Length: 234
Image 1 (cartoon, helix red, strand yellow):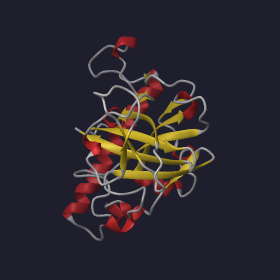
Image 2: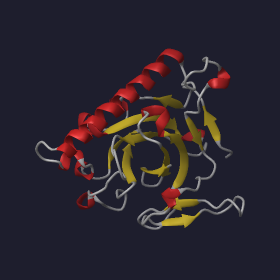
Image 3: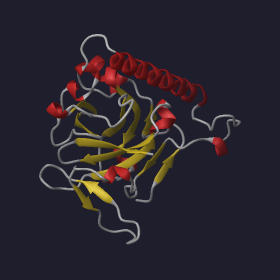
């Protein structure tokens, strides 16, 4: 499938879904650390795929990579710069404990905790502004320009080949994707039993949360109903 660029809410693509429509259990605890950016009907990427998958942005980090220092919670899906989710009935749960994040591991008052709390608040505020804009206007627009079809910003790029970038410099097992142009190599992460995840698409996280200058890449394994996200920082 050729890449599909999404500019507004449409059948099969819902920006800013409610947390209770995204997370299967412990909704408040998930929503404390994770921002649901968009819900995607997998059939938009491949008509043979069924179900819904979500672009989900961790509020952390304020510096470094998500998962820094959370080694005790690492597993085959969750590690530095990678976050996995297990799906059932169109909703998901994180694939490890919440001590993967730094904030729950910080005990007592400290400058570091105060700085991280400030980052959480700033990220949530930016997220709320963007959500309010898309609910009012139906799309997001380049700042300072008149709302028009030409001035909309892309909400997602679905399908096609996973882009290259610094996300591929990782200890996560990857495989070179087959097909496509030889001068545009693409990589895919591997499941624990050595199969390639399917590439679903990418969003510019800054469009949704303002504080995260990165692309969020989403992969999915239909056999285990498992999603995997990573982050390409600029």
